[in-house]
Image (cartoon, rainbow, N blue to C red; front, side):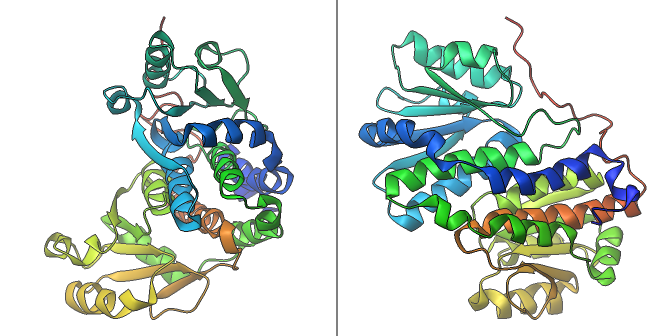
Length: 338
């Protein structure tokens, strides 16, 4: 993506992706310090929401908590399913950019009716229905997005959740953030190998694989919204455990932050066996076609997500797609009516 080329910047989607760099640069981890203390005393945290408001923000937080050994049980679930659980001992964060997502409002109302005061909201708007049913609401600084596909809001939601986990784990997130915005800018604006773009243009299905931290799964959703191509998320080693039976040699598997111990198996099953193309979003060289990204340490998932956005924008433009307006998808999936 070229930040100085109107071919890109005429789209709100590209401008909002580029805005993410400033969102990361200006993020204040201390915003959540008080809430994190209350959540830590609770000991259990559920992160709920729908679509992009949950996938990367919540799953990145879960992985961080487990990796850092935070003394906090963090889990995530879609709101309708979460509403079937006993959440009496949980603190609950409900994320909805619009502040009007019906499923999220329903679970917060249920908690309110049950007398659970540990209800937190995360939204891009002020004075919303969400805020009326949360005890404390965090409003994103990134502002409302005009493109259907959420980008900068997803990143800021993930920053908010990661800051909560950082406080609980006793980490200084400001240290982790140092240099991250520059790395994201590099990932967003680096040129993509034309061979990768060509392979993606020919692919009936674009698969994503990688850690279960929401990056690959979020890019799977963004593939639908930005390129209008079919996509699927293959968690862990699912990519080499049966699905190869129905893969097409024209398909592409994009592996986010690939694990070196799995290189050989991916080559054997996917490249040699199926005959398809494997693309790696990685900080190091791999045997595959690489989208190289700078190493940002604990902020690597954000940089990898930015690199995936860059990749999808190039494909969308090559397909002459209006990046801002999906034909069927809506900005607010299911809006509360009462």
